[in-house]
Image 1 (cartoon, helix red, strand yellow):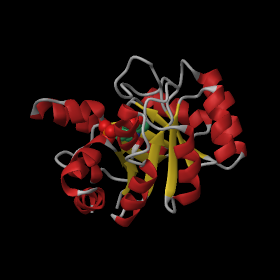
Image 2 (cartoon, rainbow, N blue to C red):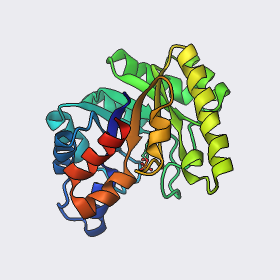
Image 3 (cartoon, rainbow, N blue to C red):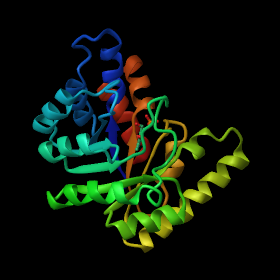
Image 4 (cartoon, rainbow, N blue to C red):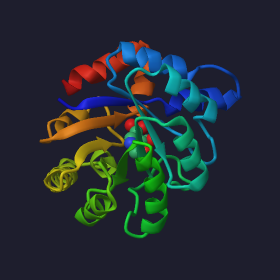
Length: 237
Ligand code: PXP
């Protein structure tokens, strides 16, 4: 069964809207664990629009499941990751103007920057996953670079607005996932997954981890955080 990584960024988005101390993503992480989360995911962005350095440091001390830090392959955040040592780093592309991570990382075009960052992380025993589009060239490059896992971007599957397009994007995920597993990579999926579209991808052969944020946070406003996580976990199960 795929594990559920709960992305708590948008708890911090609400806090930062008022630059106050609540809601605290540290509390949300604890409730996510009580709801059955197998991991806590957070993205420390260069513009610090939601998660702050303090959140990462406190979560490292309090989270008892896997702590997955999403970050750009940037020297400042890499040195922070090397100081905190999360269990896993997921390397993502980052653009200031984007609302959320819009596409997968171009591992081929950014190989030197990624290599420098990865060497430091891997030397400290941090597992590195690459967030890439379901594209065999990017998966192959991630493998050659020494990544332990790839997280395939499920955005195009999630955003498809008719059944035919969704089937097409689903097949792309299935074949890219099989390709990753053949290469010995651990398979993660994430982005845009919701209570409505998660079950199909949770059944993809060999998928080990699903990272889900916005949909869980949205439901949590209505039903509470622990319950929202539990409902997602039940669907995956
Ligand atoms: N995985 C990665 C690599 C992401 O960047 C994000 C968004 O921060 C997610 C998963 C979660 O996406 P969503 O909030 O759409 O569930």
